[in-house]
Length: 203
Length: 206
Image 1 (cartoon, chains in turn blue, purple):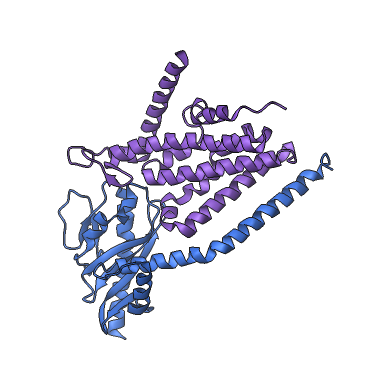
Image 2 (cartoon, rainbow over the protein chains, first blue to last red):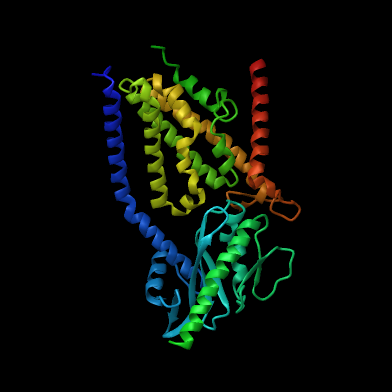
């Protein structure tokens, strides 16, 4: 049997079936966890966009998210409500970074101007360079800045420049990431601003 | 059948005498790609070591049934199987790390060390020595990579494992940004190969 030419085919077929079956089983076992991680990750990012929110552990994040955040499909953002009052908007943004998709959330206060925080839940930029947009040092710069109601709501500029009220310093050595991040954030913030204006005119 | 080398020899070969990085110059792609931050490197090394050891073990188990002409296909299948398992485990239990490593976990499949060891050793040796061979080649790869990543992270960012190091994280040290960028990997790798080969030559003389 083993010197027959069809043996190789049957052998490969059986082997592939065997390993694939194991993989399918394993991926079924972990699928729920993987999906849950993705959802939690997003919720974490939304909560991070409002640094004033206090929490002790990850379970609390989920509770806070389900209780205090509600999606407003019309403006494509999450409304953050606490004690019956609107506290702010969590505006998700996404687009192509230098290597791959960058996805994050920007928190904007109820005045629709002041940035409360920025966070990322998906990015594959160069570790140590572009990926540092995910570090506190970069993200913290956004807190308290105000977005401009123009074509470029925010700006990410080289670290030598002096900053305007809507600008932050880019990560050194990550020019491409910064250019793309600025563009994709502006695009989605602009879209949100437009949607909000539209809603106010004709609610 | 050729008698198997004693285990001690297998271990020494993988770790030093035939070290995959500076002797066989295998697996350089991942060496260049993921050595700029120590933590990522460590996880990558553990993944690769496990994949290599288990793939060698499996290939060796099947070596007497596998037809010669399709052995490469079988090896790729086995390697891919273990790599996907590692990838799933990271995605499910350590999503942050999975994101950091990005595509590189999947690319272990194409790492020359894994297939190199399956082809050169596991295909003609018994399972246990093959497992040891894979394991120690993985460890040999790991310690070279960790050495490179410590140098790169320290010089480029002034930290090790994200912890600020004295002097290197102060303003006195002008961070060598290039070390955490891809070109820095070439400098670090070349220097370390040079260093290890000179050490090795001295050792051989005495």
